[in-house]
Length: 490
Image 1 (tube, rainbow, N blue to C red):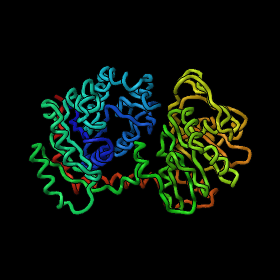
Image 2: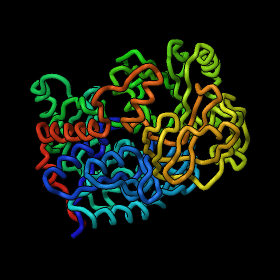
Image 3: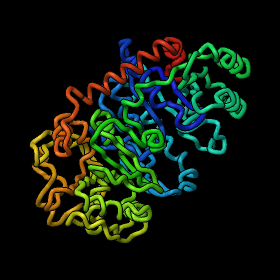
Image 4: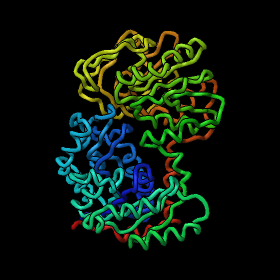
């Protein structure tokens, strides 16, 4: 029998849908149900590699973990990875489908509905319940034609909807009542009720607000969820979250990460930020890299050449030179690794107009962007310490040159990854997720003068946080009621 399904949509972006889906998935799993997450269309440069060699949004990988299953390309069949202000790489069922300008994609997105429904049908054969996450807001009625992310999907797949409103940002009553007013009658009929998210303080003070929403909409309240402190322990998917994670100050080891315009896979740094002896500063545009940093990490990028120009426009190349003169260290991951070399060439125009750019010249390597895209899980050891690492590769292009003779990592499949400068103070690699390995993280911090927090087990921390989300939902939301409105296939 095909699974029941329920969709959480939001009154806007960043209302906490992803975390609520993760928490609901874990809560239902703990009730003995087989659960799968699903997001028809996502837009994010924070992605994860699936065991079948595809890529999906990072949030869906976390939600799969909450369900206790491996991630699948069918959990997020359409992924948009922005490369510029008006264009993105389009990933369909885990594979590169092509590049599209925003206007062109809006005109063609309806063509992808078949792939979305195919993936959804596959998941429904595997589970008791599928919890679906919308994108943005269904109140964006200018995007309703051809929609595959919100009500367009709900109507096509026959999935009931619960709306999520974010009270922390203000205007939650207007957001929910306004969404009710903007939806046409056919779309409104799919809505079964609403959840209030991110509440702080005495919930009784919002009793009148709840009554107003119910009176104006006729929708059922499924509860008021408090601010979820566990969210700070979990990987964030959207770069907007960096606005609240710009500085995590806690210890004597100072690490700076410049916020590139197309920063990607920035959850690489979450394990470092949880270390009590580490301060991680996410440096926004317009600010210099801190002069007292022990380490600067250049993060991944969805548009390496464009972000090289962006980095120079911020003066961060000058800051890096000063940082190295003071004895600091630099690490580049994926796109950041490519930037550290002498040149980055994109002859095929994979990430933008064809061309080439001078790199930072801090590693004696060169990169040529070319296909096919590398999407694979990988494991190995850090050559300097022998500590085990594990993660994934997700990149276009190949990097080679004299400094590759000093690789950062030895991989279990016989390959090497990365390069290290002759003086050992500049290094880079393609492996994402390496700081999640507790032993490697401790050894890495020891080089910077630290020891790693005794007993800090990152994977166990994530598991506790997911259980914490489920606990809070069971306490403050009507989980039984949400399950009761989940519908079987039409």
